[in-house]
Image: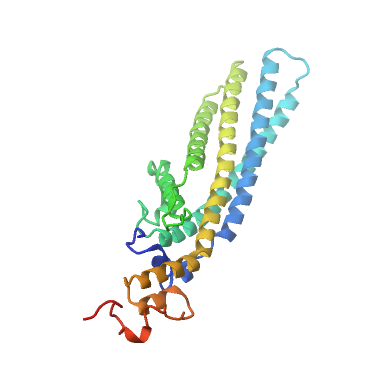
Length: 291
């Protein structure tokens, strides 16, 4: 069964330099998962604070006597502090995620050399390029996802569901959009008028919706990072057995010179198959070639 590089899976993955070129993303994924978990917790806290603020503003508008300005100011200060921590966490998560993303793309290039629509450099540049940042990272992730899919019994790459990728990317984009909307709404609020409470309630509700989307995006991203890293690690662990099995089948069919297979299957030379005596076949000549 041929890969996108027109070689069988076993031969492609057992080629000289392949195991050495593969570099595990496990360590980098741990940092990303921890930061994504922290982002999820901060997002949940932001939702609670936004809903609490909405309730306080509503109480003021309804003339409640048990709500003081000090309570509102304290909640605003808490919201600002949480927002500062959230920004710092987002930056740290973005850096760790891109570092991890570049590593898994390197490995995906080995698993599917011609299975990617965009160059490897876009795993970094796509996030900082206007407009294309809305879909290039999605394409890059989808290609890595499919390239890292497990193989079936026939050596064919399985087709994986991309539902978790869709959930991750759609909620991520939704959070960015709602954040921009909430920021624009807040700038337009006239704090000197009585209507500011109604306007602030609208702002915090939009912020709460955005924080909810961010929470879902963080959880979906945790699933994506964990599964993609695990799939690549599983593919690496299965390289030697798959390569040996495929190489034996290829040699038995006389499709490649046994010397080439012996160099590419394993670091230690294996005994030549009984049906193809090594001393009876000159180097570079096919076993069935009588010429």
